[in-house]
Length: 312
Image (cartoon, rainbow, N blue to C red):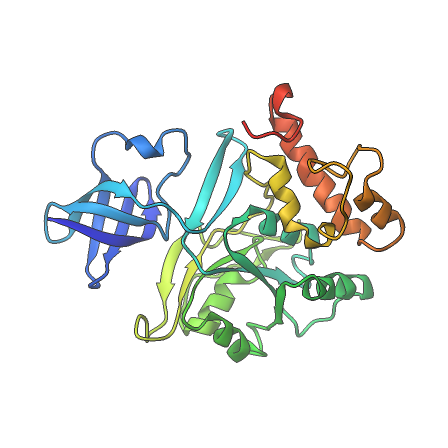
């Protein structure tokens, strides 16, 4: 018997798949590989819709993966491949913190660049603490650029109900640096007890407490409520795209600048209106150099003949 289901957990090529009727199966890929998965690292991820053959009441063999309507992917430095982390979510909640670890807006920029076909909500956790004036301005900028923003405190419960309202009826991937309090925030909105950890004092950054992605449901799902995809904390992240020009879509402020060249990368080109807007103070300079850093990362990993920004 063949069944459709959603991947709720993926560990060592063993997938926990929940059918639409609510039955849970442990599923493996049938044979060594599927044709559609060649050339991908971690090809089946949490959120994927899959077709599988039930071989018992609790086990199955994966036959096919449906196309993805959205995904969050990064560049895997060790494997030199794009790596999808999760798929088919309705939105991404990018969790930041004010301190321990400190607010890193360039990390947020990279999360937006790694999101494909899905909007990003910027969530500031630990809002019981104070941002510096520069940090506050940088956080407010996301709202002015059209990103939805929310401030919460998993510790005090401030605005947790507001966040819960943003999650209602949706599947949301929770992304963030190690130590920003993702698991604590998941606990707060779900009323669960996922494992949490202390922040490393030596480096002022978090220890990993979620070592693989997992789909979690609110008690009232699927009739109402919401689902969360809790993901491992990232210390560094780089966009996965094979087309450098796609990174520009993470910077909506560039759209108003109509450069003479459609393929302008806004870095070394003459008469670039984006660079002029940065010089005039019309585009935030840190955002611009955040973009430049991503492009340089991508160019450094590409063969020379791809460094013009053209797709492989």
